Amino acid sequence: MGLFVSSFGNTYIILSVDYVSKWVEAKATHNKDARTTVNFLKNFIFSRFGTPKAIISDRGTHFLNRVIKTLMKKHGVTNRIATAYHPQSNEQTEVSNREIKTILEKIVKPDRKDWSLKLFDALWAYRTAYKGPIGMSPYRLVYGKPFHLPVELQHRAYWAVKSCNMEMEAFGEARKLHIQELEEIRRNAYDSTQIYKEKAKEFHDRRISFKTFNVNQKVLLFNSKLKLFAGKLRSKWLGPYKVTHVFPHGAIEIENDSREQFKVNGQRLKPYYENAHIGIIEEINFDNPTL
Image 1 (cartoon, rainbow, N blue to C red):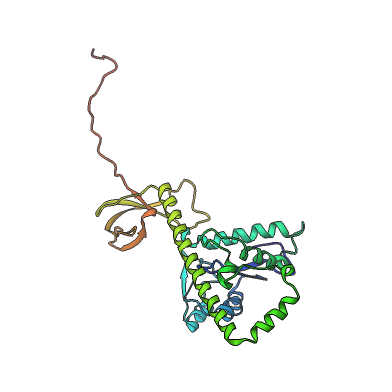
Image 2 (image 1 turned 90 degrees about the vertical axis):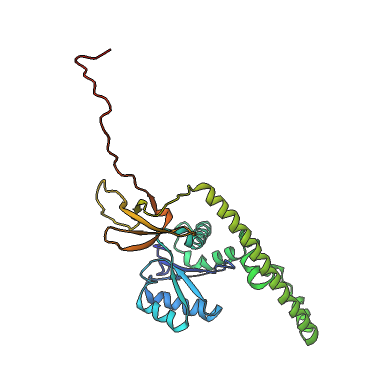
């Protein structure tokens, strides 16, 4: 995220979100190059949480370069790229970015130059807040218990914990129960996430108009590439193309005039209507009209 007002030399925020627990890690940075991204992944992600199976990023140059590719190959991580014309696949990151920005707006000073110092407080507020998709806070899903403020802790609690830890068998049984409880909490979060996704999908499907295409049908393709100087009055639809195959999951295979075939999302297509021949049905002479 950026470009922000300079705060102790920091002008950007690099942010990562866990897909399941919605846990957020962020760091204030000076720039947005490949070295900063590698440093963030090594010190904030790999060393603390382990190497993930896959990382979804946008099409920024700080994520698509030789240094990042070498790091991913070394640790066996798959680097997936969010599709530019299908932003729903990267909506989780956009929601997290918006929430972090909203929290920072409420706690920074009027000159907004202390946002890098308030970033940790914003992350704490985001992690301990209730999330609808998982039905709990990310803190509880990660640690297995609700968070406690420092004012809630008492001095005598230290002695109670110290005496309980001396009984290894009782502590072991309690630890097993905590692990089982954490697994139950994660299953509940998984069920809540599935229900939330079904409701979101149903709401999304009601707002879109489904398009049906047939083989050999001519269609137009929406050009989603960003062009700063595309020209005035230039259409964003390319084609026409011919449909060669329709897949059940929404993908459409089309071909151009050169017989080159490629797959696209059905949301980027619309039917192409050719000009029909219009004949003269009746000719009327207005000088000598016939009654």
